[in-house]
Amino acid sequence: MKTLILKTEGFSAYGLQTFDIHRRANHFPTRSAVIGLLAAALGITRKEQSTLFELSENVQIAVQVNNAGEKIMDYHTVQNFRSPMGKIQKGVKPTYREYWCDSEHTFAITASDELVKRLCIAVKSPKFTLFQGRKSCPLTRPLFEVLVDHNNPVEALKKRAERGQIFSDVQGENHVATLQVRDKLTPVFRKYAIRTVYVSGQMIQNSEEIADELA
Image (cartoon, rainbow, N blue to C red; front, side):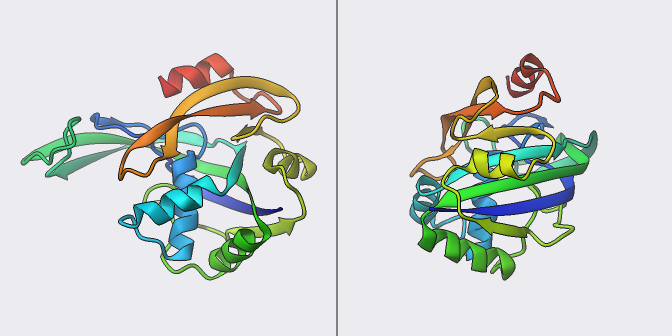
């Protein structure tokens, strides 16, 4: 297996699933957001749920928060919004959306040699426009960083010796916390499963504070 290393910098907003007025941005890029980024590069649309699910099931992901940045909030109005029951409601609803300014993230994607090769080509020449979470957060640098021979995304990131906590599908050395996050794709459109996220590396935020953000 190989590991593809990607990197982003700048304005980002990796939102959690919510129907609330307050649309929060997660402390670290969610797994569903990373899969969405890869899928957009490959040219997979939102309607191709089985293909998205297959992609999700065949990669291990670790994300390093090199710099969380500064959180800001924006005001929006939404027409024909979706209710907590999933039904489209008529009318206008105000929302407050969070963003992170000057964030920096490094991603490690571990998969079979064949899949990593496809992803490597795709991120260098993406089929769809890529964003850092929301459409208002464009990439500010090339996404591709390097391709390495490693079968563990956490260890692949640690070898780079960059600063920041690592949030991963798999447990690595210097484990400091375990979180439960609903961001894992399922075969059903817009339905997500709970995932165990292993946190390792340097503590830049108290694990209880992170858990509070995710509550």
